[in-house]
Each structure stands twice: as structure tokens, then as C-alpha cells.
Amino acid sequence: MLRCVIWDIDGTVAETERDGHRVAFNLAFASLGLPWRWDIEHYGGLLGVTGGYERLLFDMQARPDAPPTADEREGLARELHRRKNRYYTGEVLAGGMPLRPGVRELMDECAEQGVKLGIATTTGRANVDALLRGALGAGWRARFDAVVCAEEAPLKKPHPQVYRLALQQLECAPGDAVAVEDAPNGLAAAQAAGIPTLVTRSLYFRNGTFDAALAVCDDLTWPQRVSLDLLRRWLQRWQPAMASR
Ligand code: XBP
Image (cartoon, rainbow, N blue to C red):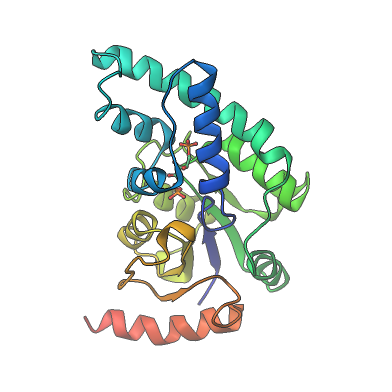
């Protein structure tokens, strides 16, 4: 029985990467006088690394002008990440970042039908708060029964930690939940926690292959509106298929 829908944030609930986090990273580089800039294409490649701090450290490996020692690189990455999050929650989200099509409708339907809502994300709590405050209003937190962020789940996707914690807080078995994700690392994390996963491909993962998904769509209204009824029908079809493997 479908009891919970657990949402990823970046790329899934809103298109936050290209015009949100990426722009804020570039503001952080500039604020420290660094010549580094992440263009749209380069950032797409970096999205294979989840977590902004981890992404910064990864990118520095290929930069001859990055600090020479691991300690210095970690210090710089921490400072850049702190600044990036400040720009993201302040300047970048100030203009408002809309929810992706169909997200609000599916969340509302869950609330109407008593299906719990959870969040499982590798980004920080302040980033989630700033995004959802803008999109859902100051009372957004009351809509969710569990909100698990980087602070509680330091092991980043594709590690399943964030999903396991969300299931615990929701008091929900993996087979009674559906995860909503946009990217291969997210799908792998939810799948490793045993949760059937709907993939709503984001800008950067339009051409991704998501063979293990419950279903794949371009957004929650295309090629058809994803309602709770449709999720339940997909689940009925999917569970027997999984059990017979
Ligand atoms: C999203 C990410 C994050 C954001 C920025 O992962 O990879 O790193 O880009 O987050 P997911 P930070 O959507 O799979 O949870 O706050 O760590 O910079």
C-alpha cells in the first residue's frame, strides 16, 4: 500500500542546479578573487559528484592553480561552500525558483489522501528552507512528516543513508513508499534503500538511462500527469515483477 512519497530536492522539486547552485558557486569563486568559473556544460559533468563541498574538491584535482596540500584544499572548499550557500539562499533564490510542473499538485493530492510526505536530499537544511519557503510559503515544513538533509545524512547519494533515515522517521517500509528522483545517483540511493523510484528527468539528465526505475517521465505532467492513482497502478505492476526476480 502506498503510504509515503519521498522527494529529492535539487533537480526534482525545482530546477535548482543550472541557474541556482551553479550561479552561486561562480559568485563564490569571484568573491574570493578566484578566476574559476563553472559553465553550464562543465557543471553538468560535475553533477556526477553529489554534494557541493565534495564537488569543489573533485574539481580542484584538475586545477593546476588549486592549493597544493589536501588541508589547504579542504579549507578552501569549506569556505567556498559556505559562501556558495549564502549566495544561493540570498541572491539566487531571492527572485524565486518555481516548482517543476506537477510537483505541487502531487504533493497536494498526497495531503488530501493521507499519504505522508518526506524529503531526502544531500543539500543542506538552510537551502531546502529557502527554496520551499519561496515556493510553498513560510509554513512549508508542516506539510512534511520527515525532512532529512546533509546535516543528518553525511554519506552522500548514491549511498542510501538519507533514504533509510527518511523511512525510519516516516515509520514506513520501503515497499510502501515511492521516491521521486531526477538523477542516476539519486535513483541508485533510493533503490539501495529498497524504495521504488519514479524518475522525473531534470535538465542535466534528459538523456540518462534509468532502467531500475518504477517509471520515467520528463516532468510530472509529461507525457502524462502523475497522479496518486497512477503511482498506485505503477506500484501494483512493479511489485510482483520485482518479487519474481
Ligand atoms: C544535489 C546535489 C547537491 C546540490 C548542492 O543532490 O548534488 O550537491 O548540487 O548541494 P541530490 P550543496 O539532488 O541528489 O540530493 O548544498 O551540497 O552544495
